[in-house]
Image (cartoon, rainbow, N blue to C red):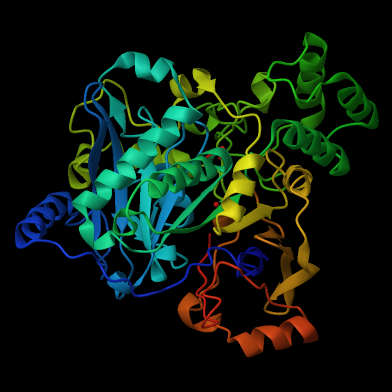
Length: 509
């Protein structure tokens, strides 16, 4: 049963185009300098890592010299012919959660950590079969990223995260000039529903001031179970709780009539209703996949270790039970990550923690999360800007997540009032419904049946090669649309030559 579920993979998730790009001309001195910088960041091998044919790099890029802010990255290049493949930047949300802990180690990266944290094994559904993957820990204070100005950790938010992430990307490409001119896709999940569009907006503004040869070749974004709009996200979440029998009729009616979902800070009466719903009605469930077991201790109680960290989504009421209870398909995976990445030999191999930060590496930073001081009320205006600017926008939802549920996303996207190009229809994997999709003018929305908050974790790609098994010509696409509509048509593909490559895509992280 579990394997069947896993094979209902996201056959539509990361629609990334594989195009050959020509890097900008550079002097021999620049080339030598870049090669030396790359070599300094090269990962020879991680402790307990199996042999792999692809190259890896990791290290720090300083984004604010005066404050001593530096962001940590981990690049895993494509298995084959990486120079011809695009760059996929992955951001995790929280806010305050690590893309190394989640995106790289649980979802789309090439490795998985074993249960004893003694080594790694291969993830056969890794996206680097189709793209070069750049995992960024942002903002400073997340994971290995740091600031020498301690006040930065007490005063951060959406604005600084977007600004620093742009500076990182520009300076990272100076270190890796072979990625200049490469097609770039921004991806992420949950609160990265803010990070990804906000970084896209920063890149668009950056590009408008630069000559064409100096621009970042941003082609599109993709976000999953994404925090999008305070009002519609909150309303849609309560609707999901009720429609999935998580709360009573009475509590649902009281929440809908009492709470002002547009407010950042709810009334005491509304907070009390949220508290009652979660304390008395939810029970001990994993809110990030309501049908999966939580990570329990040996005595049967819910673990109170790292996996029990509470990470608040800024647009939600502040009751502690609504906070992030980090979990996954193996709901204890964050425990393995926190053990592995705190190993001194692992940190040396990653060129990480070189400044000897005065705290342990954690999957999420409670300090950052509690002190998140600015959050945009709605990301929908950025969606309009991206669509008008010709970016490919792709939104997906795992349909058993109750934290940023599919109903919240549908309510939010409906406010864009986009014209429908291809009406709602099921898409199939091995003759089973994998989810549903609708293609709009400028945006594609899809659900993933049976997937939780971290879609690639709960519904990874099937074992077939994504670069071979899901490549369709224009004629084949049209025939399938007219005949069965059983395949997802992804706008993120190369619409001129009709070819696209699929990989599995995904938090509050």
